[in-house]
Amino acid sequence: MVPSTDAAQPSGLRRLLNGLTRATNGVAIVANVTGTLVVLGLVLVVNYDIVARGLFNRPFHGAVELVQFAMVLIVFLQLPDVIRVERLTRSDGFLLLIGLSHPRVASAMRRVIDLLSFMLMALTAVAIFPEFLKMWDTQDYYGIPGVFTAPWWPIKLTVLFGTTLCAAILLLKSVGPSRNPATPTSEQS
Image 1 (cartoon, helix red, strand yellow):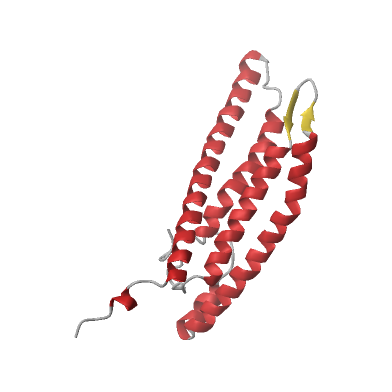
Image 2 (tube, rainbow, N blue to C red):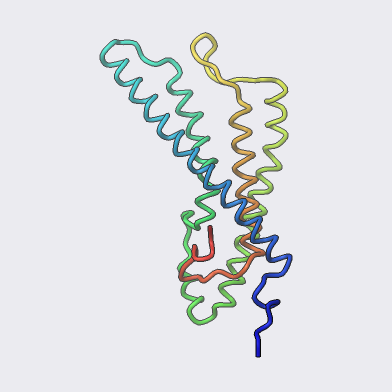
């Protein structure tokens, strides 16, 4: 008897979810790489400031503002990938323990946690969107005029992008296939 090919091929909804998961994972990886490049740029700025201040008594004006700017960029560019690979600091000892004897209960609890996390990230994205539009429209800036200034809108856009991508990843985790609690990243990527 020949096995049915229908069972071997994923359904249309499953293919759609797999495609969306691959797409969001790819964007999260690119954002993580971008965040890493921001870290390297931050290292260069801080080292330049130290050398220029120590050897030439000419500090880099705006180093503090750039560090503040970069910290927000780093967090919200790397957060989606951290969520994707499930490396966000959390306590899942209970889920691992209950997963040994009741894997379906643990899976349901993971889905609920992912869904609640999705809602928090989505609410954050909804809350930041009007702020981004306002900063884009007013071209408001931060810093010290005459020394160093930078517009606010790139920060707001990065927060909006990061929280939206986190929400998408968490939503796909909550409706996607079950994950093995012992190897949380086995079905990722």
